[in-house]
Length: 202
Image (tube, rainbow, N blue to C red; front, top):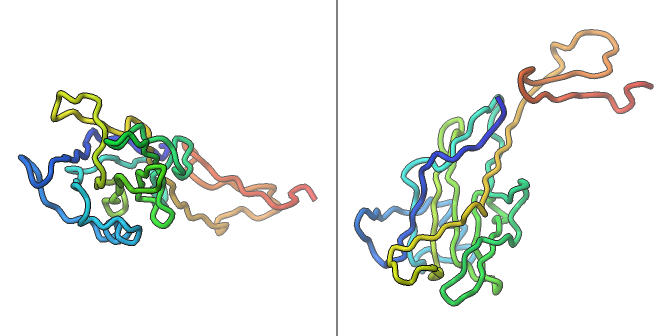
């Protein structure tokens, strides 16, 4: 079975209205998230609001070894480095996505001036890791297309991806004797690793 990340259908919803509203829960941010935001000059105490998903937003399956890393990425698996979020501040500034350079479980939504408008954190869950919750925090009011609807919602519309890698340990202890041109490791029904010498035919 191939390693895969799937959406569970659970979402994280952040209410821009100040203070607690119906069904809101005042929950402290994970230390890894809040301390990093503070180091970046975005003190969570100055935010409009913050929210967490009610359960895992993503699930991970097909792990044959152990999960090595989970990260916010672009569609090709690379770090977000100014990719479009599809969102704008209420002042009309476009917001771009950046994977944090110190913690790739954090994505920052920044304006062209470098101001952090919002941030999202992926909290890994399970032991071994099998999924992740999403936390979000907002510092600037965002533009909503329907000015007549106070509950008009916006989202990242597929502009944010999650990539996962796994670590597989293998050894040559069971290798047959003789002059082997190559060895294969892994699940025969899935991905395998082929190991050859530097100059196998010499």
